[in-house]
Image 1 (cartoon, rainbow, N blue to C red):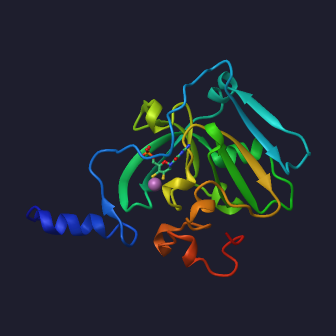
Image 2: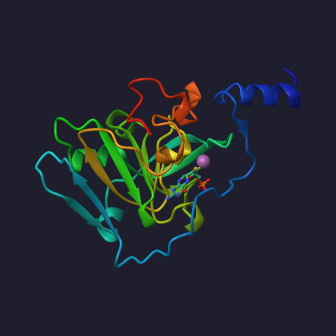
Length: 210
Ligand SMILES: Nc1nc2c(c(=O)[nH]1)N[C@H]1C(S)=C(S)[C@@H](COP(=O)(O)O)O[C@H]1N2
Ligand SMILES: [Mo]
C-alpha cells in the first residue's frame, strides 16, 4: 500500500473533528486574565456545596499529589474553532474525587472553580464521565504555568472552556447555575459534537436562562 497523500491524510484527521473545528499545530495558550502564581503553601483543593455528608473536603498540594495517578488520551476543542488532538493527560480522574468526596443524592450539576473566580458549570454526569480528569501532566511532563499548572480539568466531551486551568475546587449543586463563560453568551451545555457554542442556540432544558 502506498502512503496516503497529504490531502487524504488531512481528510482522515478532520473526519475526527467535531463540526466546524480545524486542526491546530502546536499548542496555543487561550484564557481570560493573567496567569496566577502558584504558592504551594496556600494552595488547597476543595470539594464543597451539597456533599453527601454535608461537610467540606480539602486537600493540600502534597495530599493531592499523593492521590492515585492515571492517564487519559483526549482532545481539546476550543469554541474559537481550533482543536488539539491526542494529548495524553495525566492526573486524578474526576470520578476518584467524586468517590472520595461524594455528592448528595440530589446533586445534578457541579461548578468547577479556579483561581481569580473563574468557573465552569456542567452536569454531574459530564463531570464524573469516564475520561474526565484533573490533570497535572500532559504527554508525560508537568503542565506549564500558562497551561494550568499545578492542576487543570479536562472534560473531553465538552468544549475546552468547561475545563478550568488553575482549578481549585468543585461545588456540588442541586440546581444548575451558569459559570463564567456561560454567563457571557456561551452555551450552557457546550457539546462540540452538537456544535453547542452560544447561548442563543440553547433549547428548553439546556439550562438556566441568561
Ligand atoms: N482558569 C481558566 N481556565 C480556562 C480558561 C480561562 O479563561 N480561565 N479558558 C478555557 C479555554 S476557552 C480553553 S480553549 C482552554 C485552553 O487551554 P490551553 O491554553 O492549555 O490550550 O482553557 C480553558 N480553561
Ligand atoms: Mo476556548
